Length: 258
Image (spheres, rainbow, N blue to C red):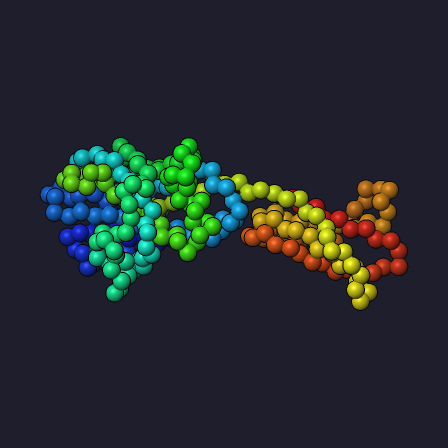
């Protein structure tokens, strides 16, 4: 993952490698901060249906004023070690200083806990097409547009509502994104069977995150199937083609998934 704080009072400073994330306005009203977070979603199958999202942030400090916070999807990419209030990366200015995002697409949460506790920003997809579930659903099929979220206080002009959370550089206090999803499963179906150069070959479909057993028997009247090959789970849908040397006796093959 990547995370960083950007500050309006230090618009050209990068805070991508420190142990905290800050969002909100300082107690004296002089420093407005926003926190950026981006997670690697490449391990989620592209045909997954997202059912629940939980973003966990551990508080390091509790402000004098409690506040509502918004998580908005960012509209431009950024580099953790270069991002500032003015720039998404070195030499690349945001379209709007403070990050390219829209308050209209934000998910809203209220923080009430104290230092050392973990706040969970949770979305169960109750509102289709909107919120954290919708954001992640879009990103897994449009990975090039996964720019992450920006965390902002609401309102941002209330002095003393700035929270600090652990960043990824803070062991034991890092942000954690939990993604729950379902994946449609198509049972393995053998196709394209052929005999070539003394081998029997066949093709079958593989579904993500399922292992497969290739089994054989010489007699269909019994249940004595023996496993001759184990295929570990793959991360993407694909097809597998296997070939086996022909034998002088009948040989039957089947594919089983776990």
